[in-house]
Length: 92
Image 1 (cartoon, rainbow, N blue to C red):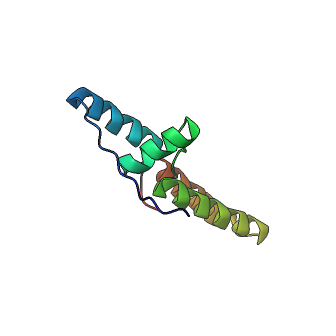
Image 2 (cartoon, helix red, strand yellow; image 1 turned 60 degrees about the horizontal axis):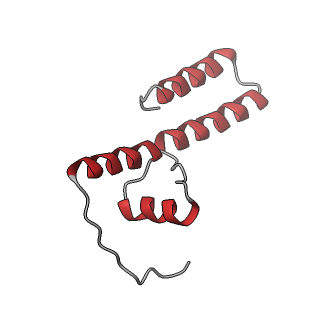
Image 3 (cartoon, one colour; image 1 turned 90 degrees about the vertical axis):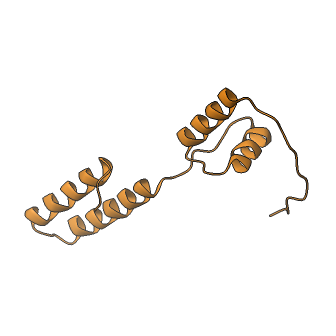
């Protein structure tokens, strides 16, 4: 990865700051610098993967393993409920 050696300072109005923060949140960014760099480099931003999505992906992989292993229907339903809860913002 190339080292970031150059710095730029920009001035924004409060409404522009609010818009920047809103767009960063929509794309999953926490760093304005990363968001702006991606915008400049590609003309678009890469959606960041939230931790909730990572949890859901792991739970789906576990569900697939349970299905292949012939787990009881009740255990599969419990796993599906846990995934649904994570999808709704709950903790698995």
